[in-house]
Structure formats: C-alpha cells, structure tokens
Amino acid sequence: MGALRPTLLPPSLPLLLLLMLGMGCWAREVLVPEGPLYRVAGTAVSISCNVTGYEGPAQQNFEWFLYRPEAPDTALGIVSTKDTQFSYAVFKSRVVAGEVQVQRLQGDAVVLKIARLQAQDAGIYECHTPSTDTRYLGSYSGKVELRDVLQVSAAPPGPRGRQAPTSPPRMTVHEGQELALGCLARTSTQKHTHLAVSFGRSVPEAPVGRSTLQEVVGIRSDLAVEAGAPYAERLAAGELRLGKEGTDRYRMVVGGAQAGDAGTYHCTAAEWIQDPDGSWAQIAEKRAVLAHVDVQTLSSQLAVTVGPGERRIGPGEPLELLCNVSGALPPAGRHAAYSVGWEMAPAGAPGPGRLVAQLDTEGVGSLGPGYEGRHIAMEKVASRTYRLRLEAARPGDAGTYRCLAKAYVRGSGTRLREAASARSRPLPVHVREEGVVLEAVAWLAGGTVYRGETASLLCNISVRGGPPGLRLAASWWVERPEDGELSSVPAQLVGGVGQDGVAELGVRPGGGPVSVELVGPRSHRLRLHSLGPEDEGVYHCAPSAWVQHADYSWYQAGSARSGPVTVYPYMHALDTLFVPLLVGTGVALVTGATVLGTITCCFMKRLRKR
Image (cartoon, rainbow, N blue to C red):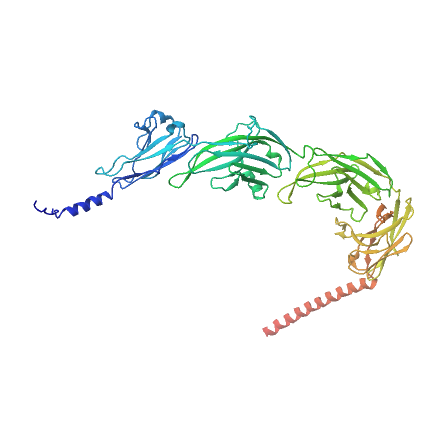
C-alpha cells in the first residue's frame, strides 16, 4: 500500500470556521426557570421567560403554550403579547377576567402569572418567541414542567392512638388565664420541603376564609416566628408563645386571655418547596378547626355587696363597714389580682365621691386625700371580705358610702391590666351633729389709727352647746380694695391661733410685723405694727370649734365669721400741711425761674440791637 498523503486545508477554511463560531455566539436563546416547579391548586404561580442573542427590534413578542400530561403532543395556546385572540377556549375566560395574564418586564423579558391554579393546569409550559432574525439560528422556545403532587395535613393534637372527635371541642377560659392549643401537622412528600404552621382565629359561626381568618401567630418556612398585626405587641411582651414539640406537634399559648380572644381557632399548615432557581414557593395548604373558645370576662362576673346596712352613730363612736366581692372569679395570684376601696359622697352630692381608704393589688393600704393623720383601718378579714373602720367618726363623715372593687389580669412579668370594676349600692351613714353654735364680734380698738402706729383688732367669741373639752381657734383674714372696691381675689390669711394654742402667721399686706394672741378665754387680738398705707383693707375674724376624740384626732365641730372691720391708716395733721408746703414751694420755684428766664431773654435781644 502506498503511504497516505496528508490532506491540506484550503487557506480560507480557518477564517470560515472563525466566522461560524462568531455567528454561534449570537444565536437566539429562550430562558425559563429550571423545573420541575411544584404548586398546589388554589395557589398562584409566576413563570418568567426572557430571550437573548436575538436580532431585530428590542421589543420581542412571546407566546405561551401548555402541554397537558394526558395529551403531551397537543399545544394549548394560553396567552400572547402580540395577539389578543391567541388564547384557546380553555383559557379564554380566565385571560379576559385577568386571572391568567402575561406581564412584560422589559422588551425581551416577560412573566406568565396565574392567580389561582386549577387541577388541569399541571403540565409542561412552553415560552415561544417568534423569529425576528435574518436567519434561523439558536432556540426559539423554552419549556418547564409544573407539577401538583404534594399533600399536607393539619389536625388538633389528641392522645396518640385515639381518633379526634368529629366536632371541635368548646373551651371556656377565665379572662387573664392562659389559653393553650395544639396542632398536629405532617407531610408525606419525599421532596425537601418546609412546613409553615400558623394559628388563626375567626368570629364564631362566621365562614372561614382568608378574609375572615385573623392570624394570631405562626412559624414561617424559614422558621421565624411572627404574629398577626393585632398580636404583635403581645408576642414581643412574651404573652404569646409558639413552639414545636417533637417532629410534628405545635403548641400555642396565649397568656392573659382577653375578651377579644374568644372565637373559633384554626390551625393552617402550608408546605413550601425550593425551586431550582433558589426561590421558595408554597405548594400545599390545609386548615383544621381546633376549638371554639369562650372567654368568661371578669366584668360579667364581678359583683360587690356591702353591709350591715344604714348606720346611725354619734360623734366619736367607731364606724365599721363590710364589703364582699363575689362572682365566678379566678383566685388572686399568678393570673389575676384585685384592689378594694371605699368612697364617700356627702349627703345629696352627685357622683361616687372621694376615696376614703383602699387596699391595692399587693394588699398595701392607703388613705385618701383629707384623711391623713386619722385612725382609719382597711383590712381583709376573709377570702373576699374587706372591712373599713373609722375609730372616731365625725359629723363630716356623714354621707353615702360605696365599695369599689377592681379586677386586674397579669400580663408578661408583673405588668397588670385593669379588666373590670364594680361599685356597690350606696350605703347611708348618719353621724349626729355636736350642736355647737359660734358667734364672733370683731372691732378696731380706738376706732381710728394713723400711719406708723399699731392697729389692734379684737375678736370676742361666744359658744353655745358642744361636748366638754371643746377647744376654740381663731384666724384673721383681710380683703384688699382695688379702685375703691373689694378685690375678687379670696381673702388672705394674716394670722391666727389654733385649737392647740400654737400661733400661725400668714402674710401681712404691708409686709410689717404681726402679732396674734389670746387675751382672754374667748377673746383674740391681732396687732399690725408700724401701720402703712398698704395695710388698708377689710378684716374679719373666723373662729372655729374643735373636738378631740379618744384616738387623739381633732375634728372641726363648728365655725363662724365676724362682721367686717375696715382699717384705714390716716395721715397726721403735720403730714397734711407738709405736703401742700412742698407743692407750693415747688410751684414758686418754677414760676420764678420762668420769669427770670423771660426777662433775661428780652434784655439780651435789646442789647444785640444796640
């Protein structure tokens, strides 16, 4: 055999190969997501499609087709960016309704959107781009498979080995107590999926749907725990918890149940799968009813009664009142707390009145304004019975008494929230008056007083009635005139002597020294030293009678007010002459200076003329 001769390539062949490779780099390519994609009927799906390496206009057209498993060779037109009549009859109504649509992202990229998948939507989806190239080169369509094969179940937890009852149970919890519900969720798919489990609440007897079901809390597909908007604050505060027990059991605990927590609770399990492009999509969802929950509110149960009935006592005698809190209430402790107080309104006065005493949620007692320093006890004498005791009643204690009870529920930590309050019926209390009648007569000693002198005001007090040991006190008050009339400002305390003999000094209008003293058993005196014009005003004496009880507390048994005493500091006679003298001298000096100035001016004018 002869030796083979090597074949020589034409010189132009390498250049031709390079041109072919260069043209291949610009071949059209249609790209869709890698499949298969897993979805479930009733959910939405979005499938993207874009084209590269094309010739022609920047805005390309797209056509979508479906190949169903039962007819793999038959292409069903879905939707097109070019032809509005492209859709086949099986998709026409859904395209017109907007449930199926193609959305352009840019000139060479679109996305097919199906708002609600149906069972017959499973199959192979093809994205086709009509050619705008000068020659047919590359791929003009891309295909991706959409499957609907996965299942998931959700059910309320129950004893293993026992079938759960067909009808959901009905639960009743007290306001403030914990509400605990469980859910069993599992999947049998062989694919790598994640379960998202959420607990929701709907109004009893309302149809359950996405619009009526309010999410309480849930575990997302990325294992994050999130709460619905109305429950976000409670989740952050630790009042709402959700955890996983074992491989397929989930438990929700709502601490401090509220009236708004009543309703029908559901467990929703959703299965998510990761598509080949790395994104996550929901492929299945199932919901089960857990329980119908009723919340027994504290406001519907709290009741308050008082005793022993209308009371009539004398001054200085003890006053005891009992308050009983009743109702189907949770015991005070971990979930609930209570406070009880007494209020008093004077006879005929509207409203519940002012606070006398109370026990707070920690059992600490306190007195209301105006009762400080008195011997008053507020104590718990039985599990739900409270007693108010005034050691020595006064006529001012007469009125209508009511017991006020408040119920609180405990949230996270020690935070309390007031849940209910109730007042008892009014309980009349009568305290006999002491029968003290006071009269006071005040006057200015000497009748007339001049500036710089000391003004002495005297007050004589007469008393009728009253118990032995009655003490008297007297105070002096002044009202200042403005523009010849008395000011609307309340009278100002100048000074006085209390029932214990201790002097109390107020503020003197003129700012000078003041002295108050008892000059007789029932006679008081006020002295204003170095009287000035600022001390002018209308003064009066205000005596009061006081009684001291065995508990050493004082109460006012009577009061009175004297008539007005006008104090006007006069000027001395020399002062009245001195003022005109000064005025006359001043006028004479001004007049003389004016005349002298006039004469001098005229003389100078004549001198200039000469």
